[in-house]
Image (cartoon, rainbow, N blue to C red; front, side):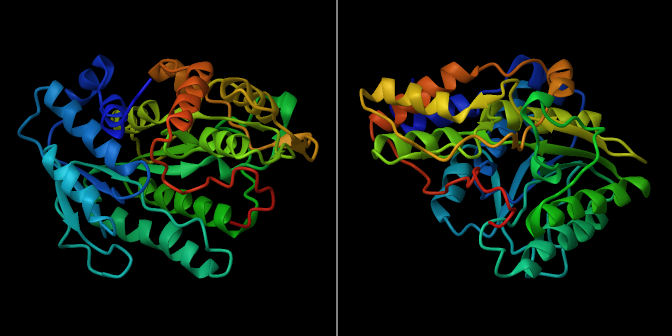
Length: 340
């Protein structure tokens, strides 16, 4: 369990031996684009510590963002990460960005884009074309989302990488657009990996935080979207960094990234209620479909997530019970029509 954000961030940024071994095969600087988001700061710190463990202390980790939260930039700087303030969408010329042998693309627009779908397409599909051109000689790991798949039957075990895509709503379509743009870059010789992530858990935000807060507040839990995939954020960030060694052309390396469990929202809520010593009520009834990914390929290549679902729930319950800080950024995992 963690009693502070400092302890949580230390756990989220501690590299495994496997990550250090993977990073030891590379060379040159690493550029993290969109490093100011929910996952970016811990990925940048994990990369810095991983490079140090790999004997690459002279290689720089560059964290690029607008840095609307200056404290995040200051914290990263104190941990050996070089921060760069840059508006990727507002500046049409990316030549001022630092060079890098490896790039992690974490930029994305989701919430609030229903009323301005052009923004989703500009950020999620148009910007990647310029990034791929700017870093055409680098290896690029691009975060995507399981939303590029359709909702699937619960008994299916989740979508696999070779299944047909079927995005619901403009956000999901624009994310598929991002994938297609990087796919085109790979066809032109850029080494690319694409990571279809379903719901990282950081304790300050995530599906478990959403459900736990609802239970703690005594509000009914909507179980219409009754099943989810989640994964510990450190594992997700580590896989992203290790995927750079698998980036390929002319076809990109595509990977589902999540935990192995198809988790029941109703059951998660009941466990939270037990941990909090309270009752829980429900609304709705479980739909026969959900957004689910089968990450068997990921686990085969990179190992099982080191923090199982039960431990994640216990950690989240303890975090909420202690009243520790929350990001105030709900996942909206229950949305079924693609309107975020």
